[in-house]
Structure formats: C-alpha cells, structure tokens
Image 1 (cartoon, helix red, strand yellow):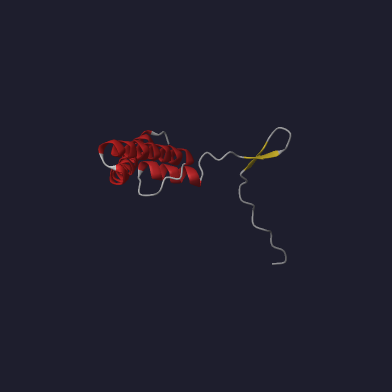
Image 2 (tube, one colour):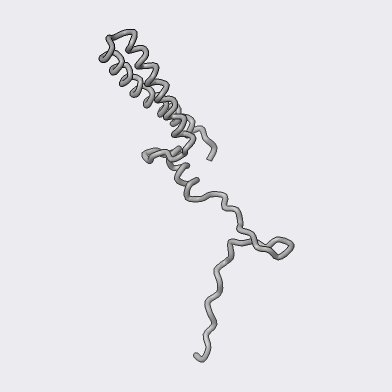
Length: 109
C-alpha cells in the first residue's frame, strides 16, 4: 500500500446558494425543543421556559399578596398575615402549576 486515500467526508450540513456561498441549514429541532417536549408531555423534569417561569412567579406573588391581605382582615396581625401568606403561596403554586400543566399538554409540538 503505497498511498492510501483519505476517508470520504461526511455529508455537509451546509447548503450552497446560487452565488456559491454556503449557509447553515436551519435546524428544525434542537436539544432544547426535545427537552421542552419531554417536560410538557411526560413531566417529571423541571420546566426551563423563561416565559412560563415568569408567569408562575407572578401568579404565586399575586396569591401571596391576596392571602396575606385576607389573613390581615380575618386574623390578627402577625399570625393572620403569616398564615394567609403561607396559604397564598401553597394555593398559588398548586393552581399555577396545574394551569401550566394543561397549557403544556395543549401546546403544539
């Protein structure tokens, strides 16, 4: 074997346009899209969508304030506000999580 040829190049992910310039082929699905699909349809993994997390934080904050306000009027100063705020945190977490679960299941993949 005097001279061996190099192995063939793998198929390129770049496409040439009419001018001969190469551009990267658009990727329809990446690792993020696969992870988000798994998080929405199967569950058991944290949701990493920034928009979803911001909506959930806003909802939990609103429930916290609402619970603390109700606790202020129903109970006494420290105990009523603290227990109302805790109830608001729990309710906000459960309700916003349930809403995001339904939205995730209805989302187009």
